[in-house]
Length: 250
View 1 (cartoon, rainbow, N blue to C red):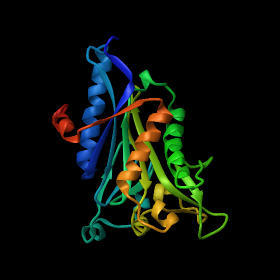
View 2 (cartoon, rainbow, N blue to C red):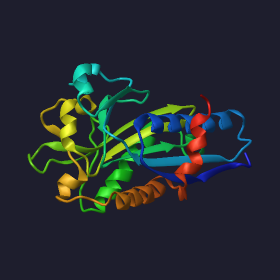
View 3 (cartoon, rainbow, N blue to C red):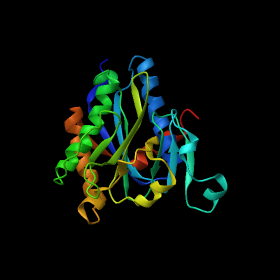
View 4 (spheres, rainbow, N blue to C red):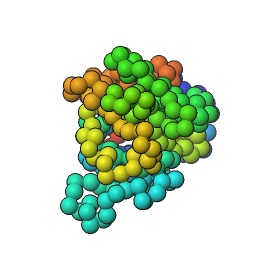
């Protein structure tokens, strides 16, 4: 266990990345951490936290219903959306430009082995970031993610960050989708996260503040809060240095 390094997480700013490329990179990093664990940690174990944007794409989790995608295959062909069925929890969601997506690949054996606490921590990261913008965000007892009071309809709530994760041998992948400058009209093509309640909607940081945010600034805030909430030292890593890993385990 001399090579275990539980307290450092590599922050990877991947810029704009097609969804399939991000999924392949996550899978490779995840497999690398699992194999190192199975081998008894002969090599230093790393944690990774990838931040990126995606071109427009819908993703459907393991427990989701295809009926929650309102576009047929023919209709999708005329619009700029990709579609993937993936291995995270949760239902359907949208990713696109202006949305900050975070993918932690962590070995929870070196942090804490509690899935509920892990998801709550992800929510807390975004809650803390929003507090820095004077926005009071909160959790919902019934629905995972981060919510705010709907500024348009008193008594209703809006989701600003969706969360869906996958764990294998206590190594995490997938993560959260934080609406910063997101085109919210694209959510009209789905039942977001499978939630059809009329008193729940989606929003973005931009829609709440009435201005476009500097996404790089938001990334820095998210990275900072991630380190604090998970009690990890953050260290920036080059995205290019990780690209060869996409060819591992294929």
